Length: 237
Length: 90
Image 1 (cartoon, chains in turn yellow, cyan):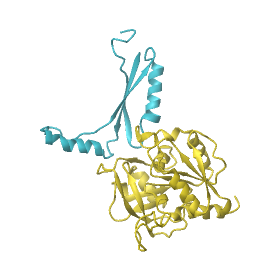
Image 2 (cartoon, rainbow over the protein chains, first blue to last red; image 1 turned 180 degrees about the horizontal axis):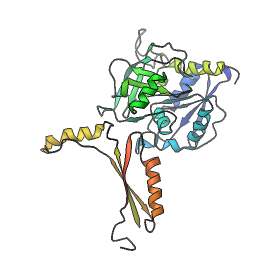
Image 3 (cartoon, chains in turn red, brown; image 1 turned 90 degrees about the vertical axis):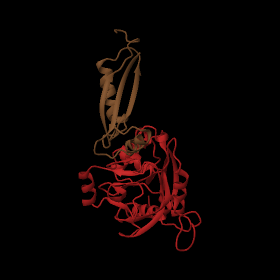
Image 4 (cartoon, rainbow over the protein chains, first blue to last red; image 1 turned 180 degrees about the vertical axis):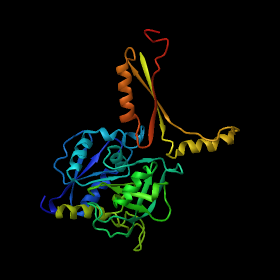
């Protein structure tokens, strides 16, 4: 890849995926070319980065993300991620990344047992990953949150390790919407190329469709930074 | 027809919101004896023929790789539960 113009970003669709088209749109609005990838196809078509979008893959019937982990596309993603390919998992995509052991911990049902849908303020804790380098550490962004199994859990040792290595990428600001340990909303791997989070940046990329903002109702575009970040990371790679 | 049962429970240190909801509802129905409820999963895996040690070992492996997530769950039981009426050597 020689520049942003040529960047091709894959978006994987599983049975039950909901947010693949929104993720493709976010990629396009950031200035790259979205490439639709199919879960049963091991060929990643030479994409420069991969988004695993939200939804309810396989209905979440066993556990959120549990069955998708074994998809042919995920085997290729796991291999490519070891080689540094930027991978972003959003909501169910985050759950798939933990089930695939590309990120530590797991998600369980929200502590209040309700499905939740709200505009969520996040604190950007790590602005050096492939997906967050266009933000500033400490910046607050507002993106939609919608989930049933969004409570991030890990053992104390893992949580200490994540904190110590700066791998907590996002924390919930103010109220913790699902009981996640230490208010964690998103994390990254050691290398910073794999990021997973529960809230949905791909739903906050175009004025008129995103969360409310100072400029007016539905004007929020705070999520676009994820997709411009990965383009910046690819250019600098 | 042989049957293997796999039982999976949330780890003790993991908050079990479903169990908590159930323990909250029990006293409303008059069941005041129960101070804690944990909710797990039971899988019934059927095979042609007998449940051999190899079948049990495969079920154990399936339990640890797919049927449970070791970060949040424990496999507490994997056993031959072939119904007596259909067991060849019953």
